[in-house]
Image 1 (cartoon, rainbow, N blue to C red):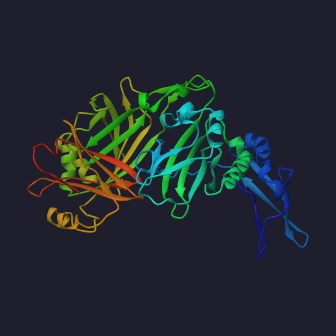
Image 2: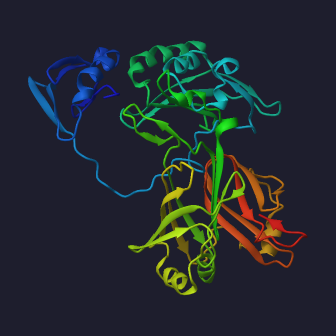
Image 3: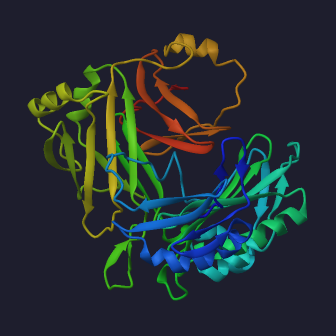
Length: 445
C-alpha cells in the first residue's frame, strides 16, 4: 500500500486513474496524501484469512477489472536471516576513510550516537535538521544522498532519499515524508543513512528504534550499558558487540529481550581432520572479556539433539560421530542459548564445514602470500592488538566482500584460518592465544 498503483494496458503504463479499495473511492492523483487515512481504515482489518477487494479498475473501452487479495500466513522457509554484526548492525557507522564527522540532529541535546531508542518526537526533531558531512582533508568531496528507511516488520520496508547538493530537494523529501508519518510510531525502526550519490558507497548509518515517551529504554546509553559476547569453538568465532543483555517490560506485563534476535551462518573451510579436533574442544564464552562457563545451549545435527554447556567438550567417540555427519549440506545448528543471570537474545548459528578449498586469488601458503602481499590493495589491515587471552585483528573494507584471515607461525605452518562475509567498514576478528602460544614473529594475512 505504500506505493501508488499503476496499470499496464498493453502499450503504456497508466498512472492517472481512479478505483475503489474496499468501496473507498481512491484516485492515484492524491493517493500518497491519503496513505494515513487508508492505513487507519484498512490496517486493523489485516489478518490471516481476510480478503480485500479492489474494484472499478479502468481497463479501457468501458471495461473494468477487479482484484481480490487474500491474506495468508507466510511459508516457513526455515531461512536464517542475519540481523546483526558483519551483515547488519544497529551500531552507528561512519566511513572514517572518507568522512571526518557527520551531524544529523542535535547531538548535544539528544546524544544520538550514544543511544538506540528514541521517542517519535525525537525522530522528527532529528530528520528535520538537514545532515551535514565533513570530508577528510585528503578525500575528494562528492555528492551525497541522504536516505530515511523504515524497517517495521508490520508496516513493511520503505524509504525516501534526497541529494544534499540541493537544500530544496531535502525539504521536498521531508514534505513527502509527512505522507508516511503513520509509519513513525512506537515499535518502528528507522535507519538514517548517507551514501555517495554515484557509487552508493555507505558513508554513515544510524539506526533509531522508536518507543513510547515513558519507555525505560530511553535511559540506555551504548557507552555505559552495552556488552560484548564472544563465542569461540575451534575455527567458529562470533564477536557480538553492542548487546544490552537485559530485558524490558511490554505493555501486556510480559518481558522481552532488549536485543534483537541474532541468526548467523558460518562456513568453515579447512582440512576435515581438524573438524574432529574442534568438536573435542570445549566452546569458550566470554562477556566483556570475562570467561563464563554457565552458558547452556542446544546442538542439532541431522535431527539428533545434544544439550551442551560452555567448557564441556564431547567425548572422542561422540565427536567422531558428529564430525562424520556434518558437511556443507548438513550443518551444525546451535540455538536455545541461556545463561544464569543474563538475558541473552534469541541466538541461532548454522555451521557448515567445507573440505579445504581456499578461495583466495593465491594459494594460502606463507611463501606465496608473502610475495603477493606487496601488491596494491584498497583493504586496510591494522596492526594486531595483543591481550593475555586473544589476538585482535582489525581490518577496514571499502565494500562488502568475502574475507579470509590467516595466521602463520615463524616456521610457515598455518595456525589459524577464518573465512566469512563482511560488509563495508571496520571489523575485528579475535583469535585465542591458545593458537598463538609462543612469543616471537607471526604473520597475519
